[in-house]
Structures are given as structure tokens and as C-alpha cells.
Image (cartoon, rainbow, N blue to C red; front, side, top):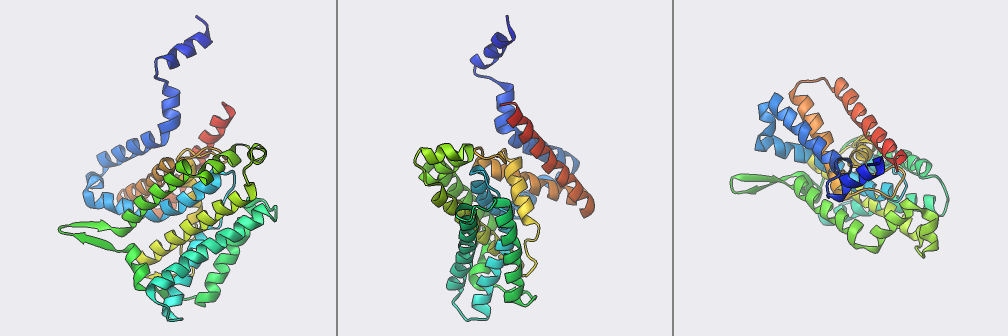
Length: 327
């Protein structure tokens, strides 16, 4: 029997270990990691700690869902952390300093994120700037505007934004609002990717932009949609973070863009575009949260935590590179 025949016999029966690991490697990694931490720290599996992990994962996960759209379409968005901070600051400032209603302040924050995303999209689509450069510029612009608006000081959040970081009391059970938002944004992301024209266009553009253009997809407009969604998700994440802290800080969400990109890549998305899923991004964000929570409980210093997480990110990118070479 030839090697090709042997390979065919492995797949013909419906079980292919390499395919199984390729599609569910992140989930298996999450289960193994959680199981190992549970054995080392019994309190790791307590309901309260699992809810804490959900809350810790929520901000990065929501931000990462937006970045998923960008990476699937073959781009990158380095500005989401700064856009999150700017959106939260505009929302809080609108209520605290301009006297807008709490609900209108929330809308102002969300629109700020969409506006920043549209600027990114226009720079990439019509300005023909590389996404790396355009969003790097927005990273600096949004952070600078946050400092200008706040004059370098934290601003108290209105009720509508504080609610995003609160906890609902359901009898004796407490359900964190960030976890509810996380699940809602996860469903929205999956729906957009699987059930909408824009979702299918993202995969097509990321797979082969020229082929997508020749097939009739308006690539420019779809890129505007992609970056606007990324800005909207970043704004929501920023206000969730401000809600948890009860204030919008000028230095909030610094470095979160790297965590968001890492969550998407760890979840199996390809940095070359065309591949990615909402479930993968959710698992990637949970892996980062579980890792940080477990290392905290093991009393590992924050310095070494950065080293460990950096290694995990490097391994995820290495796996993505090897996977692309193997196609």
C-alpha cells in the first residue's frame, strides 16, 4: 500500500487526527490548561472563580471579536485599545462635563468607535495605506485625543456605562453583565460571519482580494464595514472596562490590542486572511484569561506572566505559519 493510499485510508473512515487537532486544537489546549490548573489549585474550578475568569475575558474577547473581522479580511487593527479608551472617555465626558443624558452618552461613545473605524477603513480602502500603518497612526491619534479630552485625569462614568461592568442579582445567584455582553457579542459575531453578505465577503477578500473584486464584491465598501465593526466592538469593550472601574482613564486599555490580536490568532485565525471563527476567538480569549488567572493563583509574578503569555502567542503564530506552509 502506498503512502497516499495509507493517507486516504485514514480519512476515508471519517477520522483524521491531524484535521481534528487543526480545527479544535485551541479548545483542546484550553481544556488541558484548565484541567492542569484545577489539579494544581483546587479553588481554580470554583463557580466564583469561573465567573471571575469570564469577567476577565469579557473585555478582551469583545475587542477580539471586532479584530476577527479585520484579520479574516486580510488586515490588521492595532488601534482597538486606544479607540476603546477614547470611546469610553467621550461617553463619560459627554455625561459628566457636557450634561448629556446617560443613554445619549453611551451612544456618543459607540459612535466614536464607529467613526474611528471608518477613518481606518478609508485610509486603507481609499488612501491605499497598509493596514499596519493606518491603524498604527490611529493608535496614536486616539490615545492623544483621549488625553486632550480628559486633560490627563480620569472621568467618572455615567449610569449607562457603569451598568456594563456591574453584576445582576438573580436571587442567590450573581451574573456579571460583562459575561452577558460577551455571549451576546459572540452570537452577533457568529451571525455576521456565517449569515450575512459582509461576512462572506470578508472570507473572500481575505482569501484572494483580486478574485473577490472580479467576482463582483465591492472590496472598498466592505473594508469600510470591516473596520467600522472593529471600531464599534472596541468602543463597547472600552465602556465595559470603564464600567468595571467606574471611571474612564486616559491610559485605559493600553496594550489590549496585542491581547485581542493574540486571542484571534490563538483561536486559529490566519494572519494571512481568509480563515477564522467566532468560536476560535472566544476560546483564544478564554485561554489568555485562564492563563492569567491560574498564574495569579500560583503566585507567579506579573513579569513572568508576560513572558509566559508571550511564549503562547509566539507558539500560536508558529502553528499558523506551519499550517500555511503545509497547504
